[in-house]
Length: 356
View 1 (cartoon, rainbow, N blue to C red):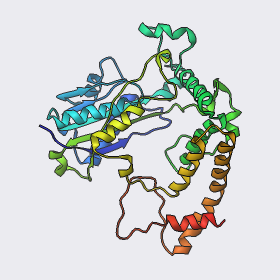
View 2: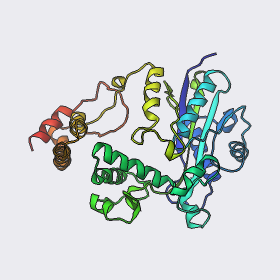
View 3: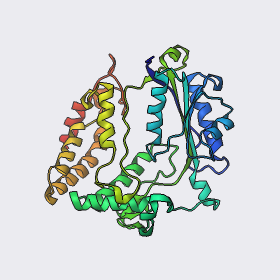
View 4: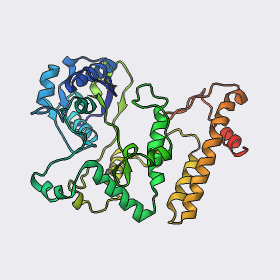
């Protein structure tokens, strides 16, 4: 048996700063919302994936949610656990082992620190092979700080460029009412913060937050029962790289370099087949080419100057565009298809920005 698989519902729990719920409550909240979006009920769920909580995941989660699944998964491979778990769930549904699978996770990492239930430092201890890295202070932040230093050495990446990641994330958060921090920050704010693990300062590091999420996957047989349009799973890829920092062959390359091509190949697609609507993609390509074509400081400075100039001119052009075209302008950064009533204004916008 081989069946197509669709994502039927996706939801978040309350998030950011949540002091009145534990991780199981957040999972339950997200799961209820995801099932409601799909138009399904807990009685429809016959597969469950979850990890990271209690003694016997996902048995503990199933018990808390009142589920009796006939397929389970508790994959735990770090930050990509949920992509891998979704791949496993897709295979299980395709093979007929389950029809409706719920994947859910919740964490109160921030609240636990405030309550003194855990420390702020992520340290995996010194059991088994970890004993070989433990004497050198192997924390999650120090591991990626070493990778950043290697990238700086190998490719000439600057600390200012790394800071742009935090600045950009905070810029995007300004429009998200659920974001923990929405005030803008500058490169100088990032660089002047307290050092955590060289070269990372406090604002380089990921924010600890509370929250939960859930995804509902269904077989093609159940699509007719859904309350919303399905999103079909086309392909996935899995790979591992290392656990010990000392066993990371190339600190500038991760397993995504393997899983990305695998996912595209299994989906029968190429990156060029993906229709992602982006304003000024040509400019992005220009900046990227300048940043990567060599190790010249002049090239990198030129890219920074172009990006800075572009960032100053774009907002004003966007403000004027609706009046110029006498239409409603919608800015999106999501996958979308063209419609008969949609007009691509990229060329018009490009002309306006270039004229400034």
